[in-house]
Length: 102
Image (cartoon, rainbow, N blue to C red; front, side, top):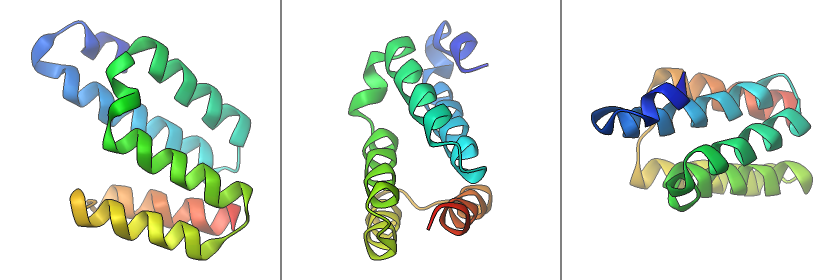
């Protein structure tokens, strides 16, 4: 779905949201390998994604999960929320990621 959105200039920002939610979805089921593959594919499909806030947030989430550090995770969520507040769906996904992985 996100790849289709990249082909339309008006929908490119929506593609980043789809990539972001796809990676979080993998993390909600504890699939770090799938999440990292999805993140890598997103960077290939949309090179601009690697400079996005979503990408930076996901990298911080990966780091906190790999370190098994829930404080690092909370800090990443809080700093992301200061810049770009999350809606109910993203809050729910992030809560599931924390419960599954930390």
